[in-house]
Image (cartoon, rainbow, N blue to C red; front, side, top):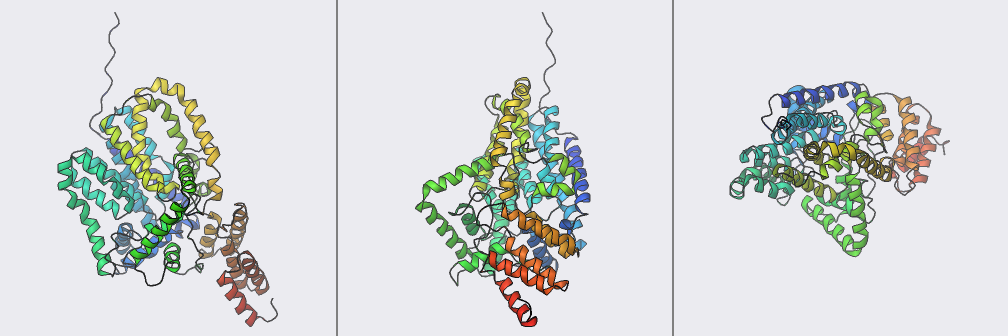
Length: 533
């Protein structure tokens, strides 16, 4: 009779695993930031990141309620403003803050994993998240995800650890970082226990009430946290939406290099809505317009939602603000841990684990709660548009579930890995075109960064690359093509070639006859240089 083998190690106390996961994560973030900081894109953030820098700078200068009533949720810019007030405004300070937050999220995931699985699988889950390329990439930008992830994951861990007061407060703070996390409230109350959860609703409401009060005092009592939701709902669900391109529905004049950043989505939302509306009323107007469009053609909208589901589950990192695949060229750690479609790593790793995880039977209570949080976050993403950074918060709730379940059926899981790989590669092949066709023309933003860094020749080559890339879309979206032509004209004029500048501005008008900056520049040129046509 064979002797029984040793009993499998059970889940237990985290021990030093959270510290080790945080150290690994922090080291990778600093390594990536070290390489990325050598490129102009590091010191000259783009789109939302540029807006956060501008907003935080005003807060650091003493304007604590800048831009209230708020169009965007204010907690991240307020935190960044506090850092700038203490340490000065710099991207180095941003990267250090974000790296610490990213390391904290790795420690939290390690604690969650160790509570629900043996040490070996917990180490694997912790390493996967600590090395998750989209996460550490964002640690070198001025985007809100590092803070948002810490708040979400901290709320979940607190609730799982029997600390509902901390959990509900952290969840409330996440709402004033990105309001979509309010969808998690029913799950959080259920996790705390109905009576205990309801009693702690005031803690959840506290940070939301504080922001709401600022908005009310600033003139819009119906703007609870932010008024961005309506226009974003339209961008992601209008008849022209493709489900992943986050373009404002009208052209806003381009920002001159070195000028204060203007929020083009906010400007478009206000300019296209009826005059005289408050911020919250503008948001409601866009939501109503979107719902009317859905009601007019529900079949088309259902088709759009089906495509969004494909993008949500795809291993491809669809660009949003930044194109991570483009940025691989600047960072060896990113180049190693992020690969383009069809072999789209690290997303493909989840597909490798999936077949084994599906064989593991009924999920445990912790697994079910993690899955519920991930699904609710995914639902919030589907309501708008799908990009890599908007779906990123789903990942740390999925990783422990997939790893724990795969580990329980690891022999069969290993045998079925090729099936998971084939499914992931096939889906990446189908959705891989979103990288080139997304709304993020990274060469254009890279060119602007080179202009601000004083590298005119580098900027000129990148503007040309941006124009070539935009023509590859094959649709009516210019993807900053006209802006690139206009900026090339500015470069030529600065270098004393007015004739070349005029040619570029005429090309911009040929591309978009309504592009007023090029028309105005050309008119001035013709008045001051009569021989130029």
